[in-house]
Amino acid sequence: MVRLFRVSKIYPPNYAALADIHLQIEKGEFVFLNGPSGAGKTTLLRLLFREEEATEGQIIVNGRNITRLNGGAVARLRQELGLVFQEFKLLPTLTALENVALAAEVVGTPRREGRKKAFHLLRELGLKDKHDCKPPALSGGEQQRVAIARALVNDPILVLADEPTGNLDAEMAEETMRLFLRIHEQGTTVVIATHDTGLLQRFSHRVVYLQRGRLVGDSKPADGERSA
Image (cartoon, rainbow, N blue to C red; front, side, top):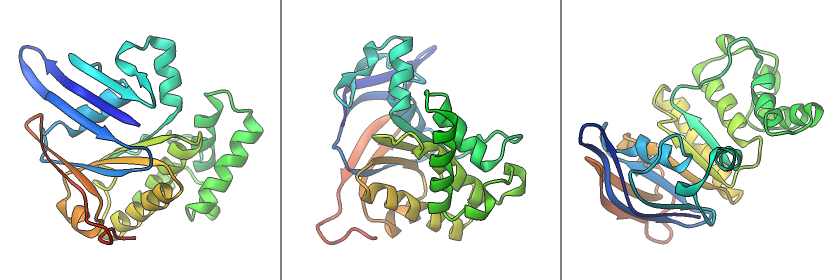
């Protein structure tokens, strides 16, 4: 699903956000990217959906070398990905339903079909009675669920989440993580960047450790250790 070969990202004048990264993520895996602030977690995710370009190396996503994609191909790549951020990035003037449906419509889904998919997703995520609410009227946990629904509306092959529980309390963080586990159980590859070591202890999955732009560890739980 994802292959990184000797990937580096250098910012001027000479700051190595990532240095010589080799990483392989298989289809259907659930992976945490862990490390302190400045370790390179966000940069790595940005490279995967081509918000940033690698300075060196090759990145393969679903069989395509994304370092060689042009503008139109980058747009098509992003249509195959689901992106979830710490900042929910919802449009405050649109309802929850409209925020989710808009993501479907911008990739060419007919409006009626997009709204139908949005409604079903919001219902599955426990927001059946909130679909007409605008983001300011929703709690942080509810807004994050809307953001997750938006990420899923186009049936992504890969979900990338950058500190998705960073603005949530412990209870909402737990609930949000269980939503990602449900997504994973349906066969979607999930990669979550987090500095929260408590999540790693609570949800036992593969952890890729970054420090100062370098990959310093890669651990997988033993059989039977994964939490549900």
